[in-house]
Image (tube, rainbow, N blue to C red; front, side, top):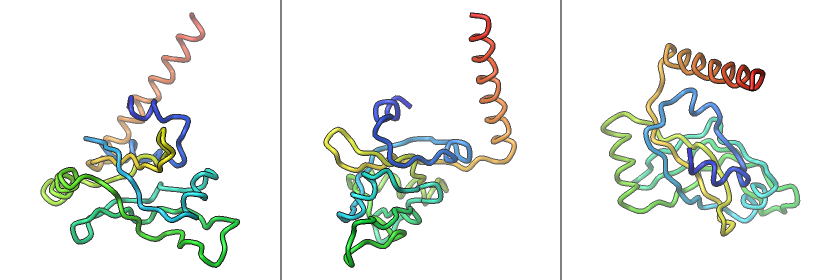
Amino acid sequence: MAQNDRHAHRFVAQNRKARRNYFIDDSLEAGIVLTGTEVKSLRAGKGNIAEAYARDDRGELYLFNSYIPEYDAGSYNNHEPRRPRKLLLRRREMARLIAAVQEKGLTLVPLSVYFNERGVAKLDLGLARGKRQHDKRETDKRRDWQREKARLMREKG
Protein backbone atom coordinates (compact mmCIF):
# COMPACT_ATOMS: atom_id res chain seq x y z
CA MET A 1 0.00 0.00 0.00
CA ALA A 2 2.93 2.35 0.60
CA GLN A 3 3.81 2.19 -3.07
CA ASN A 4 0.30 3.34 -4.00
CA ASP A 5 0.51 6.29 -1.57
CA ARG A 6 3.67 7.51 -3.26
CA HIS A 7 1.91 7.71 -6.66
CA ALA A 8 -1.47 8.89 -5.37
CA HIS A 9 -1.56 12.18 -7.30
CA ARG A 10 -0.48 10.70 -10.64
CA PHE A 11 -3.10 7.94 -11.05
CA VAL A 12 -4.72 7.72 -14.46
CA ALA A 13 -6.84 4.60 -13.87
CA GLN A 14 -7.48 2.38 -10.87
CA ASN A 15 -9.07 -1.04 -10.54
CA ARG A 16 -11.10 -0.43 -7.38
CA LYS A 17 -12.85 -3.81 -7.50
CA ALA A 18 -9.57 -5.75 -7.55
CA ARG A 19 -9.01 -5.63 -3.79
CA ARG A 20 -12.63 -6.64 -3.16
CA ASN A 21 -12.64 -9.58 -5.59
CA TYR A 22 -9.08 -10.86 -5.00
CA PHE A 23 -6.52 -11.46 -2.27
CA ILE A 24 -3.46 -9.59 -3.58
CA ASP A 25 -0.42 -11.73 -2.67
CA ASP A 26 2.23 -9.61 -4.38
CA SER A 27 2.37 -6.50 -6.53
CA LEU A 28 5.01 -5.10 -8.83
CA GLU A 29 5.55 -2.26 -11.26
CA ALA A 30 5.60 -3.00 -14.99
CA GLY A 31 6.13 -0.79 -18.01
CA ILE A 32 3.59 -0.72 -20.83
CA VAL A 33 4.31 -0.45 -24.55
CA LEU A 34 2.05 2.38 -25.77
CA THR A 35 1.64 4.39 -28.95
CA GLY A 36 1.77 8.19 -28.95
CA THR A 37 -1.99 8.69 -29.07
CA GLU A 38 -2.47 6.23 -26.19
CA VAL A 39 -0.06 8.24 -24.01
CA LYS A 40 -1.85 11.49 -24.90
CA SER A 41 -5.21 9.94 -24.07
CA LEU A 42 -3.87 8.68 -20.71
CA ARG A 43 -2.39 12.10 -19.91
CA ALA A 44 -5.86 13.54 -20.49
CA GLY A 45 -7.04 11.27 -17.64
CA LYS A 46 -8.92 8.80 -19.80
CA GLY A 47 -8.55 5.04 -19.49
CA ASN A 48 -10.16 2.08 -17.75
CA ILE A 49 -8.62 -1.12 -16.40
CA ALA A 50 -11.61 -2.37 -14.38
CA GLU A 51 -12.12 -5.44 -16.59
CA ALA A 52 -8.51 -5.89 -17.67
CA TYR A 53 -6.21 -8.82 -16.96
CA ALA A 54 -2.65 -9.86 -17.84
CA ARG A 55 -1.82 -13.15 -19.54
CA ASP A 56 1.11 -15.03 -20.98
CA ASP A 57 1.30 -15.06 -24.78
CA ARG A 58 4.30 -16.94 -26.22
CA GLY A 59 6.60 -16.15 -23.30
CA GLU A 60 5.62 -12.47 -23.02
CA LEU A 61 3.06 -10.83 -20.75
CA TYR A 62 0.28 -8.79 -22.34
CA LEU A 63 -2.48 -6.65 -20.85
CA PHE A 64 -5.84 -7.61 -22.34
CA ASN A 65 -9.21 -5.84 -22.28
CA SER A 66 -7.88 -2.51 -21.01
CA TYR A 67 -9.68 0.47 -22.50
CA ILE A 68 -7.84 3.59 -23.61
CA PRO A 69 -10.21 5.70 -25.73
CA GLU A 70 -9.04 7.17 -29.01
CA TYR A 71 -7.30 10.52 -28.68
CA ASP A 72 -9.72 13.32 -29.67
CA ALA A 73 -7.16 15.30 -31.66
CA GLY A 74 -5.71 12.17 -33.29
CA SER A 75 -5.72 11.70 -37.04
CA TYR A 76 -6.29 8.62 -39.18
CA ASN A 77 -3.28 7.19 -37.34
CA ASN A 78 -5.20 6.77 -34.04
CA HIS A 79 -4.93 3.59 -31.95
CA GLU A 80 -7.41 0.76 -31.36
CA PRO A 81 -9.01 1.28 -27.91
CA ARG A 82 -8.95 -2.36 -26.68
CA ARG A 83 -5.80 -3.73 -28.31
CA PRO A 84 -3.50 -6.06 -26.28
CA ARG A 85 -0.60 -4.09 -24.80
CA LYS A 86 2.78 -5.65 -24.08
CA LEU A 87 4.08 -5.40 -20.52
CA LEU A 88 7.75 -4.73 -19.86
CA LEU A 89 9.31 -6.74 -17.04
CA ARG A 90 12.65 -8.34 -16.33
CA ARG A 91 12.94 -11.90 -17.64
CA ARG A 92 13.27 -13.36 -14.13
CA GLU A 93 10.17 -11.51 -12.86
CA MET A 94 8.20 -12.54 -15.93
CA ALA A 95 9.20 -16.20 -15.53
CA ARG A 96 8.22 -16.10 -11.83
CA LEU A 97 4.80 -14.60 -12.60
CA ILE A 98 4.09 -17.03 -15.45
CA ALA A 99 5.08 -19.98 -13.24
CA ALA A 100 2.82 -18.76 -10.40
CA VAL A 101 -0.12 -18.42 -12.78
CA GLN A 102 0.40 -21.86 -14.32
CA GLU A 103 1.32 -23.85 -11.18
CA LYS A 104 -0.69 -22.19 -8.41
CA GLY A 105 -3.65 -21.00 -10.46
CA LEU A 106 -3.15 -17.35 -9.55
CA THR A 107 -4.33 -14.40 -11.66
CA LEU A 108 -2.49 -11.29 -12.83
CA VAL A 109 -4.72 -8.31 -12.12
CA PRO A 110 -3.85 -4.69 -12.99
CA LEU A 111 -4.31 -2.49 -9.91
CA SER A 112 -3.53 0.96 -11.32
CA VAL A 113 -2.01 2.89 -14.21
CA TYR A 114 0.04 5.98 -13.39
CA PHE A 115 2.89 8.17 -14.60
CA ASN A 116 6.10 7.91 -12.58
CA GLU A 117 8.40 10.79 -11.63
CA ARG A 118 10.04 10.72 -15.07
CA GLY A 119 6.67 10.90 -16.84
CA VAL A 120 6.69 7.26 -18.01
CA ALA A 121 3.42 5.28 -17.92
CA LYS A 122 3.58 2.37 -15.47
CA LEU A 123 1.19 -0.39 -14.44
CA ASP A 124 0.88 -1.69 -10.89
CA LEU A 125 0.30 -5.43 -11.44
CA GLY A 126 -0.97 -7.70 -8.66
CA LEU A 127 -0.53 -11.46 -8.30
CA ALA A 128 -3.94 -12.43 -6.94
CA ARG A 129 -6.05 -15.30 -5.64
CA GLY A 130 -9.80 -15.12 -6.18
CA LYS A 131 -12.09 -14.56 -3.18
CA ARG A 132 -15.16 -16.60 -2.49
CA GLN A 133 -18.47 -14.91 -1.69
CA HIS A 134 -18.11 -15.27 2.10
CA ASP A 135 -14.61 -13.72 1.93
CA LYS A 136 -16.06 -10.70 0.12
CA ARG A 137 -18.75 -10.32 2.78
CA GLU A 138 -16.10 -10.48 5.52
CA THR A 139 -14.05 -7.79 3.74
CA ASP A 140 -17.15 -5.58 3.44
CA LYS A 141 -17.96 -6.03 7.15
CA ARG A 142 -14.39 -5.15 8.16
CA ARG A 143 -14.39 -2.04 5.93
CA ASP A 144 -17.78 -0.91 7.25
CA TRP A 145 -16.60 -1.36 10.85
CA GLN A 146 -13.44 0.68 10.17
CA ARG A 147 -15.57 3.44 8.65
CA GLU A 148 -17.98 3.36 11.61
CA LYS A 149 -15.09 3.39 14.10
CA ALA A 150 -13.52 6.40 12.36
CA ARG A 151 -16.86 8.24 12.46
CA LEU A 152 -17.28 7.54 16.19
CA MET A 153 -13.74 8.74 16.91
CA ARG A 154 -14.39 11.97 15.00
CA GLU A 155 -17.59 12.63 16.95
CA LYS A 156 -16.04 11.97 20.38
CA GLY A 157 -12.59 13.46 19.80
